Image (tube, rainbow, N blue to C red; front, side, top):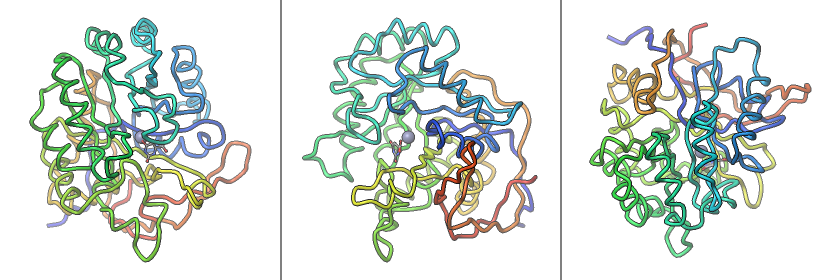
Length: 351
Ligand code: DOR
Ligand code: ZN
């Protein structure tokens, strides 16, 4: 018997790009309507590297939402070669910073100021390990000699495995994993190692990038891989293993930035994220595993309380628009193509 509705504890998004300025105004509500909390990525320009910048960004996010949104943004610090461990510790102890994000320099959008040599910031890792502050990693090598579809797997052997060995107490989240290699590495790793999985990597493989022509809206980093990897990610997400939890990596870009000779990486999946995950979990006969993945494993890993309250999904077909016109605060519409544009999803969130 198909379930007519599904009520789960209020979920969190452990990886999202809320951006800034007009884009923040346009997209913040898409996340806040569904999630209790979100780990907000710091790759603004300039990136969020200090406690002062983090607190100011937190305020801008709250101002972009209606009063009493019932949503808590959790701010992260962007690591650079010059990150000051004392500053990160101060931000964590003050409750302003929840985690640190490591982008290998030039791995993705706004990562030019990222870390050029992972071994060069050992004092940062030692501090995070000591204070229990999670390290979130964009796990791709930037070596141009490495095929783009292999960059995640090579990152594991070159950087992640040695890092986890060197810092056995460090909490590490391997963000938006895209390969069977990553899922295996995390499943077989220590309890201090976890991973987030996006909705899009559960639904698309690399064919989606070239379906009938070049599809910029299916381009994100790490890029979607072969079908065998998508199958492995579905197995990991629906396994009930608490090392795998929800992180949408929703990453909006304006149309000009997507429809360009050198288009930006990022899929805007926030508007239908939970419905998208529910669809994938149901296809795997694992709807009973959605609550752990969406609402329990993330907070437990971060050492935060579970959300109070719940959210209900009802089985009602929902057409996803080809384009969303979102108000940017000053009244100007921002046109964004959501993930699943033009498709019908079997679930909708109850009003
Ligand atoms: O696809 C992506 N978009 N991957 C990232 O790592 C960054 C993100 C963005 O900020 O646009
Ligand atoms: Zn991201």
